[in-house]
Image 1: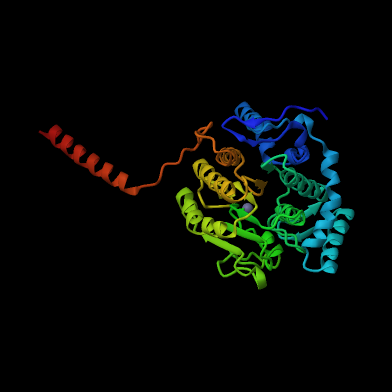
Image 2: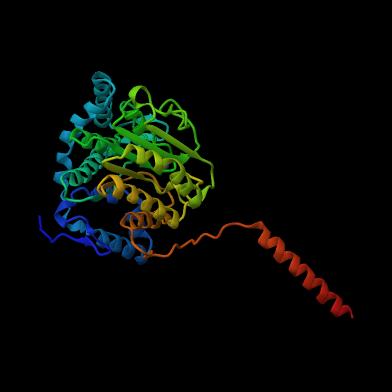
Length: 385
Ligand SMILES: [Zn+2]
């Protein structure tokens, strides 16, 4: 593979980004199945240049991607799957179910979660990609890494597929970190849906802090029994190491920042993680068809900044970003861009928000209408005179 010089963020020379030969965790096949590339290919040249700029900022060159390296991750992946499960037999059964479904052309695991031909390979590539990204941090090659992957993973429980997820990519990376000697890992999940699978995988553990800010959607059936309510705090020695922050629809940028400042950050500060995994979903954004939380680019940028701040305080700046959901085809890409800018602590945005949000205020119209009424009546009287 071509070797290129290491690149540093121009705004922060202490943060080493990816070397071109260290980016095997960027999966082209994941790209192709992912809406960003769909946007780039189908929409406009503008989005194409946006994406290329994002890649350049991060020091990535997708021409050097090595699929075989990612597929090699399947071996430790299976070992880690065994570690993370609540019971070897049950977990083995689940893996066998996935293999059987793959061998027999597919299976519906739960509502909306269908494994079809190619799904398992894609899921393994996504998990392997995330493990490679974590490995690059653990080996000291990067302190920031981002796994752009499909399918997502945060609903996958140790023995249960759910919510388009078969393998819990972030959870596997967390387990890799712990198995490599890291004492404490914090997961901060800002996808609009509850990261129930990640919480479930570490529910009785005190070495992994799981935090999820999400829409208050509750349980959605047998594949997703967890409610995401604040009373799900963990069990046994894990009690107090799962923090659920369900938020009302429409709470927006300021609401999310408030929740982070009031709840998530103090808990992270007490836990003092050695690595932070930021689980990112753009389905918390404005106009997302699956969410109503109304975050804008500014909100995502701020959340990225806050997570990076905690990492600088406790984790030697080490942050792994893992991609989850996001269903507004174009705006998701902008919010990803903003999140990464926030994590990079860029001093000013390099891209304007295309749907610059202006807070709704009915009183503005009331005042304006009163003025119109006054002027119109006056004008009418003038005409009559
Ligand atoms: Zn989601």
